[in-house]
Amino acid sequence: MNPKANGQLQTEWGWLIAIYLFLGGIGGGAYTIAALNWFVGDRAGESTRIGLWIGFPALLIGSIFLFADLGSPTKAFLAAMKPGSSWIARGTLIISTFMALSLVHLVLIEFTDMAQTEGGVTLLNVIAIVGAAFAIMTMAYTGILLGASKGIPFWRTGAVPVVFVVSALVTGHFTIMLGMLLFGGEAAGAMKTMAIEATVLVVLEVLVILFFLQAAFKLPDPRDSAQRILRKPSFIVGYFVFGLAIPLVLMLVLLRGDSANAIALAGLGAALGLIGGLILRQAVLVCGALPTLNIGGFEFRRIARPKDPKAGIGQRPPQ
Image 1 (spheres, one colour):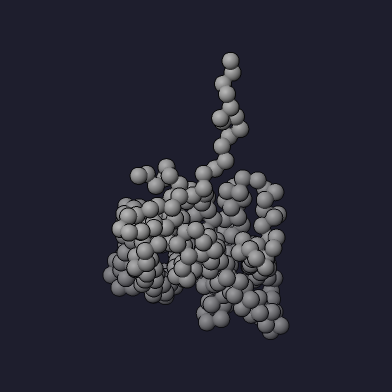
Image 2 (tube, rainbow, N blue to C red):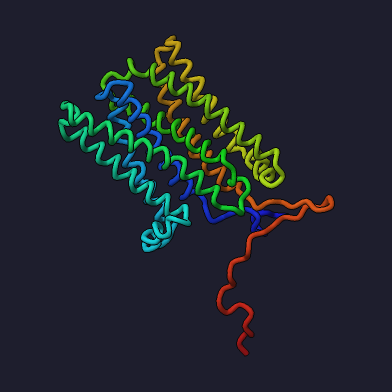
């Protein structure tokens, strides 16, 4: 039985939504790291500034992919309707607020001298705290939105938002690393600190994704999706090997400092980590399946309701 033919696998959300989730995660993750660096690191440091430059543009570009998937721009204006009962509406308000805060924060840092005055620093502190809160909600929202799709048990778990938040922090961090390599004045000195943070985040992502898959495999309803994602070569090779294992090794190489090409290898690791983050989201989407029922030892696959037939089907042919 072909699950794609009988409608068991969802086909509504594909690469466009995966790219939207990926860029939204990058924007939220990069801003969160920049906000943390604002408080615990150098306020004018390269990682803070580059993180702010990533946050708003990433969300803006991601929204373009979302609008492309909607098919009609007029649907975007309906997205914020009924926030009391719709996670799409809540997410629209959360993301819109985060985009506004991240843009204001960037403008005030880059184009004013507020960071040099006591009152300006206080205002920027408030913006950073509120912006980081909305950034975390933006990262979590993507997983919560999937969980609201009650027909897909693989998505309907509290682990999905955690997976997406951790992955967003990893991809946001790697994007900042690439930005520092490309535009940072003294990137070599700061790369080791970034490598330590990247190592911790990647290890955390490995633990979270393993917990998510194990939990899904234990339950009968999401087990079919868990088996499908573990059979995908792009997920095992592209995500686990190239998206997690190799970046982790390259971060450790950078920490040792034995290689003259450590900075270049760190850039390669960051790029691979970003590709892995995109593969993760696409795999989670395409492997979402309706549950398989087991009754009396027989398996029954629930299928999605067929689309309405085209006009004219079933009419008598012309004489």
